Image (tube, protein in one colour):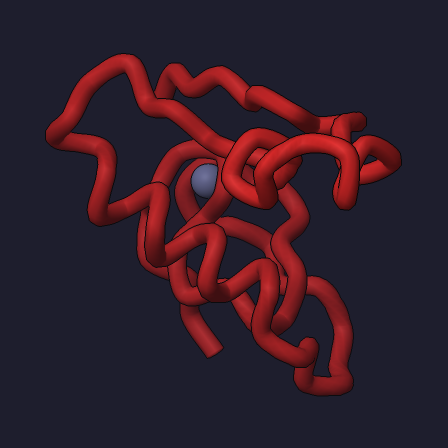
Length: 79
Ligand SMILES: [Zn+2]
């Protein structure tokens, strides 16, 4: 999924800019990726359950235990 991150380092300007101008933003190139991107962001922000990283069965990438989909290829992760 192709995406761009805006305002990654703008939090130091909070209070000097309108709040929406200083919060980080993730923009996906393809609108069809929006739901998947939201799911990944929610999983990333959720408190991480303790446990080992999960290896993706499709690409072998390491994923945090809170992820249901591989961050790299989008495949479902097995528990
Ligand atoms: Zn994968």
